[in-house]
Image (cartoon, rainbow, N blue to C red; front, side, top):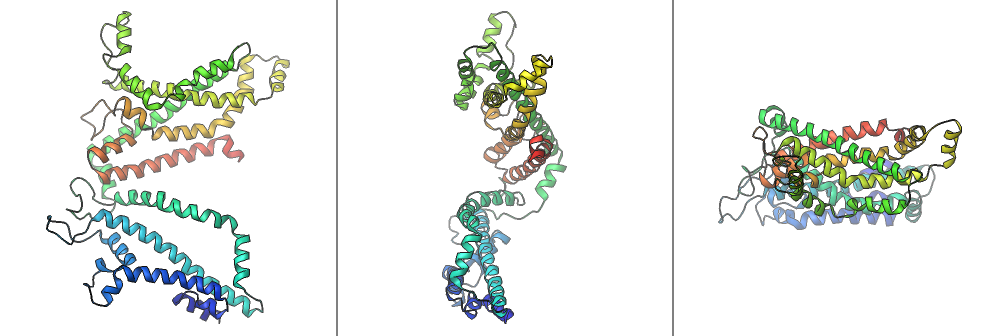
Length: 442
């Protein structure tokens, strides 16, 4: 009998619950199936079945057309302004992803409906009683947390997950400036884009060089900012320093000023005719202007220094807070044992600071891996290098993607590189987090 209840619910949602005399629950499941069927029929399938329109997948209902569009990406390009019927591959892909996600939610409910009918019938056959009202109460008590986070999860699914899935899907197509819909139909090309990045010399060499610089930038910019913040925090919290609040307020100003304003000012000051060159030449230190932004070495040095200036106040404030929580009795114990200031820092302050801030160092490295503003507003990825494919010598992977997307319209390559960035960042983050003391203690 429990098999019959499950099979009935598999074809008509809620019918198994009606057999189990759970009328309310059965009506809810049947209503959900009715919504699914209504949407599919009212958006085209009914007209196809009645012979009103041509029986093609393009003319079928929302879910059928969505799956067809995601698989084929269309069949008819727009050849001219007179073309009335044509397919837009990108719209079909987005619609297909959305319809697939919605269909998966309905499939989840369908499976839930079958399992519920089977389990409820099993309870009845064992002499137990089932009630729709009691089921709702038990569900609310057992799964309250899941019920509360479900609306937010669905919202995140459609606002965040679907765009990510679209970006991933583009990497497996030929969507670029040579195939822009609706004039062209985009095609699935599998891993050909990744193969081009790895095997075509101009792409592979550019990717490797930009990746190496991105990794160096992520670690150097984070560690320099952290080191300067640590130094300032230690100095401010040292004995004998007066007006600590005033010094802390002054040093936090670079972080308080809007980042874009600071970056544009620094770009002007590091220009060939900017303030730094004028000051150095007027002082007699140099005889000709230093190419701060047009030389690879100087450009990379400048962006690292600017990032250090903008980022160190965050770490200074963070480390200062950690240091104020350290018990003075620990420092007194070091003094009793004959230790000096270095011993206090080495054996008390530094271990405590690293334990509290090491996860944030990892987050800083990850954040600088995708640091767009500092590079773009200071050097715009330059100086240019003819050996690079559409990139400059200070371009990070993220700024290279920006250029490939907006300037060059190489969407499939940009998407593929984004996936590679995710893989690299995930690996670096996982390795660093697992090696931190805070992670091990957790």
